[in-house]
Amino acid sequence: MRSPNKIYVTLSLALVLFLLGFVVYWALRIDQLSQQLQDQLDVVVELEADHSLEDRRKLLAYLGETRFHNPLTAPQYESKEAALSQLDRDFTEDLKGLGVDNPLLDVVTFNVMPAYLSEDSLRMVAEEVQLRGGVQGVFYQTGVIAEVAGNAQRITYGLIGLMSLFLIITTILIHNTVRLSLAANRMIIRMQELVGASWGFIARPYLLRGLFQGLAAGLLAVAGLGALLLAAHRYLPELNVLNEPLILVWIGAGMVGLSVLVSFLSYYVGVRRYLRLPIDRL
Image 1 (cartoon, rainbow, N blue to C red):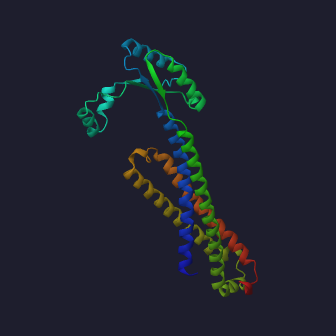
Image 2 (image 1 turned 90 degrees about the horizontal axis):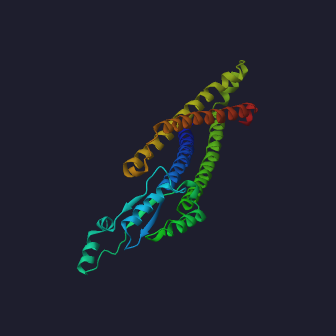
Image 3 (image 1 turned 135 degrees about the vertical axis):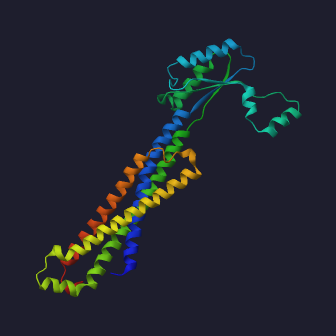
């Protein structure tokens, strides 16, 4: 068997396993990302410019005890002065130059329970909070979580389709590789049959080659996925891609194990099929 065939098979199988590992990791990370978005979705309550300290205190107490408030977080108050200090310095200096007072309002932010993250529930929460004293308006982001989940689902389907295509190509390459190898050694195989060699004895070198190619492809795929995650950790540290190393270890082990299994079974089926043919048909 020619060396290029071995390389093509190994690289193709490694690419399939790389895509599979990435799809699994992507699916796990999307669930975590959706949960993080749910935990970080703030409802913003703008207070009236002339609200009293008592109105603010009652509002904070009410939000901390209401049924829709997430008990894992506490309502937060932010003054308009603190909000202005976080804006661009040039913008604040322009306001001062124009003699414009602080246009911002004091706000209170809070998180809601996951059960209240639907559009109808958030609208009900906003209407209820709007009735409190000293509240000027209630605002929240809509459709963010659903949009992220929808886009992630479409990307996942695309990756699965691409992985299926490469899996078909890899299977064809493996079968062609087995056929070429058997055809190149047909005279040796014929001599082995004439001296009474068993099917297992003839097939053993090819099956071992399948095991080693599967192992090499699996390790190559793990190395590629590891390099991608390390690059993401370096340039996008906010994604926390390495925060659960045990899951990454299991994904890597699964990639190597599946690679060896797929390669071995492909060689087994190919060898069994072609050794049953008459020697002149190889």
